[in-house]
Amino acid sequence: MSSADPIDRPRRGKTYSVPNLLTYGRVLAVPLVAACLFAQVIYEGGIWLRWVALGIFIVAAITDYFDGYLARAWSQHSAIGRMLDPIADKLLVGIVLMMLAADGTILGWSLWAAMVILAREILVSGLREFLAELRVSVPVTRLAKWKTAVQLVAVGFLIAGPAGDQIVPGVTPVGIALLWCAAILTLYTGYDYFRAGAGHLIEDDEP
Image (cartoon, rainbow, N blue to C red):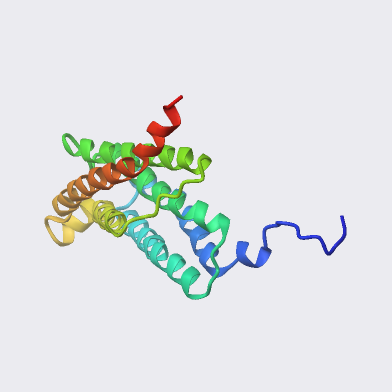
């Protein structure tokens, strides 16, 4: 094969573009936030660790907007960016929800809200993977973007949790209320995705 032949290779310029670097940073933020919460509860670290975790989480959440915005503005869309961006969001929310359940910030009936969010993300990811094999694209709706925003705000309040309650009473209850709002949006948007993909699922089963 000559050097003139077209070869579909990933371009390093896009792999290490600013939007993708922001996405990589969001993935790296996940274990850092989890480590802060783990140290604060399991090793009885200072309450200041909640603020460190919140700071890292806020920076990571902000990148969720800017990586997509910059990719569109600078025409730096890439396959790895499209693949990793939704995964980074799910990791950030899912892992932190597990830590918040473990440290008792999310208790009782509120655990159902967290389970609804986690279950929906797994189911929709499976649906997207199946539809991708059929070369069917399911676009992200505006409501789904709002769902992600509400999830991030709710988790932010809950990360502050007891540390925030010491300054402004009611931070944790507000976070729990927002978590339920996010769960409701999660159910609705999940139904939208399954309704959009249902026709392809039925067609695939027909002889």
